[in-house]
Image (cartoon, rainbow, N blue to C red; front, side, top):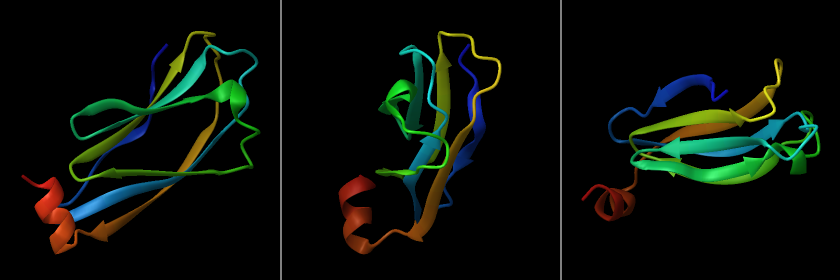
Length: 103
C-alpha cells in the first residue's frame, strides 16, 4: 500500500515550506519507506523506517519546497497501523532565494 500521510501541503505564493523533522515507528522489516515529494521532485528524500529509532525520536531533516510537499508511506509489508510524525515551518522567500529558485 502507498498511502499519503496527511494532506498535500500547498505553499502560499511568496513563501517556502521547510520540512524540519520526521519520526516514525520502527518497521518490523526493511520494506517500509517514507518518501517526501516536493514541487517537481518525486521522492526527493526516502527514509527506511527500519532504520528509525522510534516514534518519540525526531530525526532532523531539511527539505525545502516552494510549491507543495507530500509525504507518502511505501509499505510493502502491508502494515495495518503505522504512525508517522513530522514538523515543518513556513517562511517568506528571501530575494536571493526567489532569484535562485523561481526561474
